[in-house]
Image (cartoon, rainbow, N blue to C red):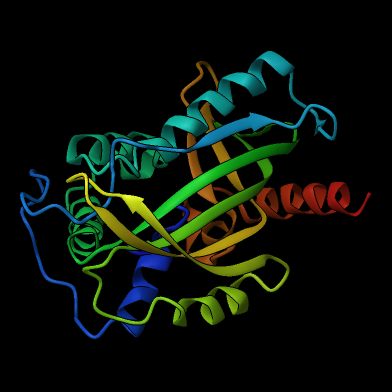
Length: 252
């Protein structure tokens, strides 16, 4: 099960390469009582449709419903609340509905990095592509493409060199605009805190799964979906057809 992650959780694993400390276990049912210097009350996330440049084979009402769920999927990951983070697991493919190992492990790792002063933060998603649905026995699958702005954020308590992540992200996303920023902001305690960020502005997408007979969207990032191990979640031919459709749209 370890091959599936939230769209940005692979970056969490990268943090272990650059941080001078290793992850440690925490209670998966509680938020840390020791604040991480982040202002969790402010979520800047915006998820919208780029109607001017949209290439879509889906009905617009259906696409708007998917976009609303896509917002929830990302928002629930970045509130700092353990209940919200667990709620975002509902958007994992149904293969994981009965999982009792991987999802708690992912939360424990994520919370460990929050406690160390590191978090992922998706800022903006502009959806500009939607494929048609492809039926697969008991499910249907589509691909949603979008421009995305997200950042790796580091508070003052982070023990490491945040600027080191800039090269890592550039190598992972060679076509993205990647930059390192520093900003003084008002922290959770009303004090001025230094927040350091590696910001990436690029293009990505998700595979969308749903039942044939009812709307129940689940998401998986394109990067993870390209892994052959995910063939148990959707057919290889489906992946190829959807990825080809997105590439053709991107090339126009």
